[in-house]
Length: 150
Figure 1 (spheres, rainbow, N blue to C red):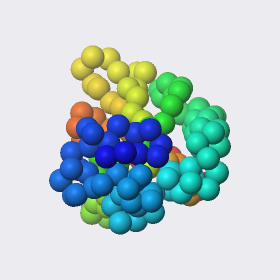
Figure 2 (cartoon, rainbow, N blue to C red; figure 1 turned 60 degrees about the vertical axis):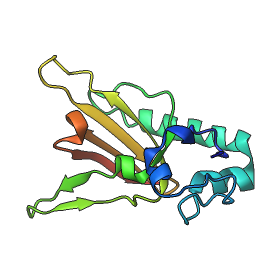
Figure 3 (cartoon, one colour; figure 1 turned 90 degrees about the vertical axis):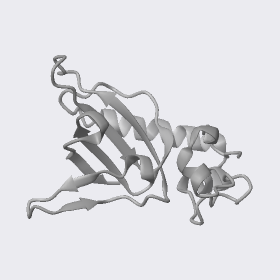
């Protein structure tokens, strides 16, 4: 499988299990839907995509979230890896992402971890929003910290 953005698709178990042929062979639609990253690269080029990622990183770092270290890069991630189920005030849970979409994201450890309590920040973005959540090991007890439309 070849990607347009440079993602290492060979390690994606989700893609292998869902007959993904990569975005190069599918014209940017690895799971039957247009990947916003591939569309960005196909219309504006790889150089503009890298500038776009830098702009996103700057936007995220400018949020100055307490306990979250500065991030330096975002990588393409399949929605199935980052689509957490968040508890709502009414006691129900909800997922906000699409498992078949590709997002840019990263995970960083909270600066306030004390060895007993381990928390991480998950960052997920696309053209329309920035979503930052905090959660424990394996995505346990997720909490939305920031949801910002772009």
